[in-house]
Length: 160
Image (cartoon, rainbow, N blue to C red):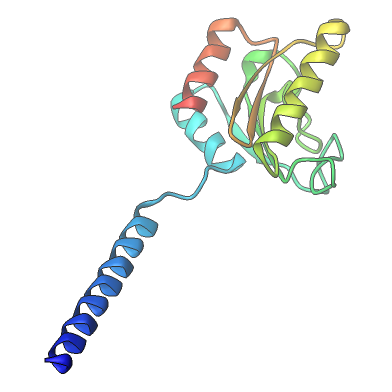
């Protein structure tokens, strides 16, 4: 009798462990990786045909010198949109090219950057205007030379 109880308990334990493992595997396989600056930019480009190029920013071409620094973003992809009417310097691409998606280490860092940008631009509008929207640790910044309806199309594509 005792042996039968031990066998039954072992079988139930093995079934529970196996079931738990297969469930965990299914969940981890179905979860998509979090979006990156590049993948978010690709989604926007697919939705907005006027975007002519995506330019990944590196240490060598970062106009802000913020990539990889302790107070900076971990990635940035610039979206080139000629509707801004600005010359886009592809050797040092920035928001003036159309838009950019900054990828921050976490959502709090992205929120802080957005707050600082909005504070500076609202206190000195002569510098430039821009639209921005947050999505987790990604900050979409859109050049203010684009029309509000054009910026709305970016926001819609970004937020999904």
